Image (cartoon, rainbow, N blue to C red; front, side, top):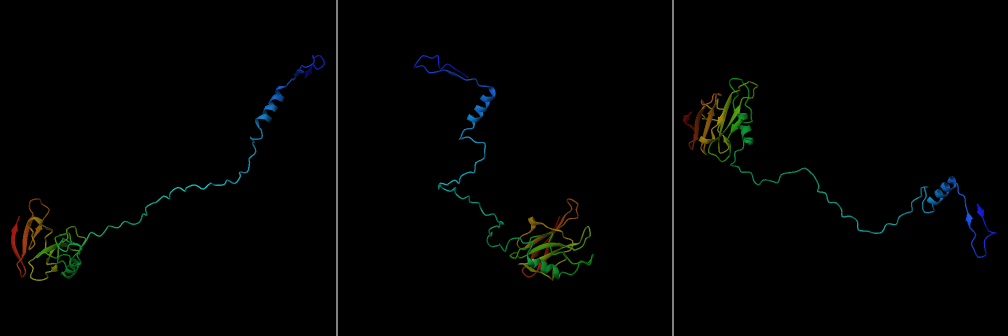
Length: 200
């Protein structure tokens, strides 16, 4: 550093020259860059005072539970019902299948049972593991099993709906050959069941 204090005229400001080394400049910049407001030291956060604000509205989520269907209304007693308990009861009263000596399966393979019809039927099969078990029709009058005075109903394996009505049931035998189906119609005559015709 140099000074000219003695040679300056009166009233002038002395000129001071400084020699600054690069290392000193870097140290000076580091100190100035990290002033009081900036610190690399972690500060403990002050407790923030929460200002009261409106809470977000609660999220309403629908409750998910098992879905149950609403009651469909009263069950129509005149609708076809192949799960009616009267069917299983009637099948349990049948004599065993003559070929396999097995009981009959209470689950119909076909049918038009309803408790309002003058005559309705279900087709059941022998409860056996045979490839082609025997089948038979079980007839009902107004939902009640007709156990006696029924013509032979073995071998039928379907109902022909187009030829059936409220007092007539058309039973179909199909041997598996197209065009060779046989249809036999039975009718409730007011006192019992009678055979009224063959078609096919």
